[in-house]
Every structure is written in C-alpha cells, then in structure tokens.
Amino acid sequence: MRIRHGFFARWRGTEYEASPDGDQVRLYVGEHADGFRQIGPGRFVQVVPASEVEDVRYVSTYCTWRGEPFVVLGEHQGWLRVEYTGGRAPVAESLGLELFDRGVYQAWASKHEVEDVREESV
Image 1 (tube, helix red, strand yellow):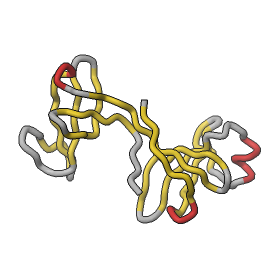
Image 2 (spheres, rainbow, N blue to C red):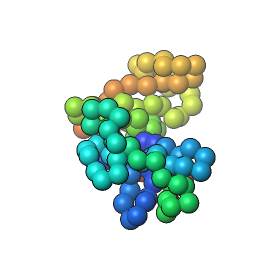
Image 3 (cartoon, rainbow, N blue to C red):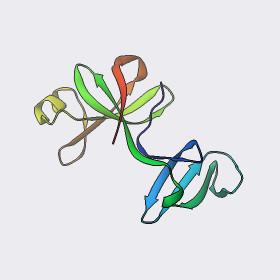
C-alpha cells in the first residue's frame, strides 16, 4: 500500500514529490541525486523552471474505515493517519475521532482495518 498526499510532478520522465511556486517547481527526493542539494536528513531538493515540468498534480489517498469515508494523510509503522470526510459531526464523534480543528476529525487506524484504499488526483 502506497500512501501519497500532496503535490507530485513529472520532470524528465521521473515523478517527484513537488512544491509548485509560481514559475518554479521544487522537486524532492529522499537520497542524494545529481543536481539535488540536501536540506535535511534524508531530504534533497532541486528547483526547476515550471516550463520544464511535464505534469503537476495533487494526489490524495482515500479509504473507508469503519464504514465511513476518510482521506489518508500519512502512515507510520502499520498505522494510517486518517481524516473523516463524511461531514457529519455526530458520526465522527460516535467513531471516537479526535477533534483536530473546527469540523475536522482525525484518528490513527490500523492498516489492516481500512478498506477500499485508492488514489485520486487533480
């Protein structure tokens, strides 16, 4: 199961995590690569002109957990950080979700408990 949430760009035939910024796009990798500079442990960046980027899209991973719809924000050691997308506070509260912000409910869910994991991109 691959969890992706954020911008991704295709540059020179390879897909990278990305951060569009006007007429430039920052591309990220987890290990040293030609042209990339280290900005932190296991984090390297290269800034390229947006005109050289073949494709930029926002990717989200969605799932169903306990019969309700969620977006997957990340994963850690067999657990997924999920955010409820059903829009009904009473349902979120009955599931025991954490109130993260006004109207935003999140939880940690075991990978083994989620169903219908799928990616959508725009």
